[in-house]
Image 1 (tube, rainbow, N blue to C red):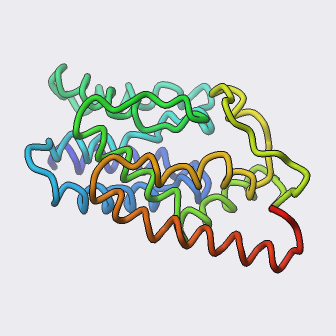
Image 2: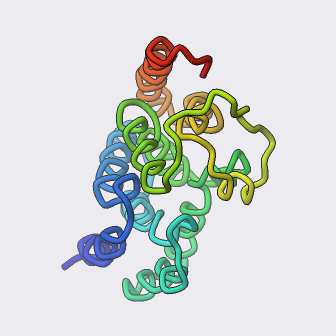
Length: 211
């Protein structure tokens, strides 16, 4: 069994405990996106990219109860990777999260690939489905026309306020396309962003609300 296969088996067990917005299917889609971007880029470390994709959500603060907070470290230790590769993977993972706009800028091409790949899965048809899956798991409203989307919020404010699912489009999802880094990421994001705009347009028509 190689390192990627070992890592996959270990993370699958963690993602079984998450809701459908961050389950192992999400990881598989992000890996597919990452490999598609990788095909257009020379000299990127594919193993670092794939390991970072597999591990990037195992210690997500949204799900990290006490027994999950160290899952990333625990699994990496089991993989027995060289220290330099471990540091690289951890740096990539730190660059993925949006954090209410307080993101850490990618420092390597591998980080750029993984961030774009993850954000592609947050927009378009899948992004819409994931948003409502997560909102439903937290008991959030579908939409609330009285809410004003927040800007310049802290990472803590972003994570703790239970806004309606549609509000999340304006606070994050509609901002992601403009922040894509790789050329392939930008290309793939264009159609997905347009689909979200169409969805919101139709939702406004059906609800009669100014969302």
